[in-house]
Length: 374
Ligand code: PLP
Image (cartoon, rainbow, N blue to C red; front, side):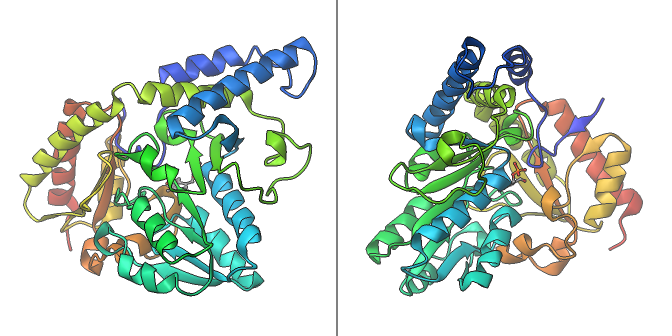
């Protein structure tokens, strides 16, 4: 039996999501078709949208379905830039954003954007830096709700207050892929954002469906154009079954998942604290589901492979940055090279058990004793 502690990379689809998906497959009409089968598909799609919008805390018409968190980030960034580039060429983003945010921002440089990285040392936004940076006319500020490697929860309200205090016209995009339904007070935080990105597969939905929240007063040019679906914001025939499963998974997650994750996190952390020579890369405000440690004495990859051979799955860094030579997020966090080289990310879900946590901790210590060299 697999022991899966890589839930920040992706999660196992929940029974509720699979049931909703399977059931919705029978609604094969195109939601844009005017006949009865199309109308029924449309009704189900709008019901999923209303459910997700209410969980996000936005108006139903402000929630758009996309194909991934990455697409949502890209759409928001390119779109908001177009709306504000006349007012300022600066784009401010944290130095620990996911590549889904970093890469589109870097592309904007070709259009004259001046990209500025906001420090997040220790998992906390440098507000003094932001107060200075925002004095230069700025088009866009991107701050993620929760970091995918350290679990740091950033203060979106503080960012909004700084933008407002500077009388800046900058728009605020928030990557909420990791934080949605998980970060404490996430609804209040998201209310401060002009746009936000979501992804179903991080909370036991399916891959290939995401969400974009866009404030109703904003009308940026669409990123994906074509048949005009999603009110023209995202063309392409909607993935109804996956959208319905997204709503089912998020609803299910809202029914006590956080409490279960918190319990397993506390148990795992307590067991790990009994080990020698271990660092805890835990920001002051963090997601319960992400526990980043430095298991000193064994390289991350070696530990990861050793555990993998035993059917225990964790991650050395985020799945998306595992091809990068250097872990820039942990460097931004302020972790020394030696501790970065032995960093491991444990991603906890409500499906994990204390027995699994025991097996994980024993396997980690076993790997270090067997293969530890550094
Ligand atoms: N943003 C963050 C913070 C993430 O962790 C991820 C996925 O790892 C993404 C964006 C991309 O989401 P998706 O895999 O749905 O494209």
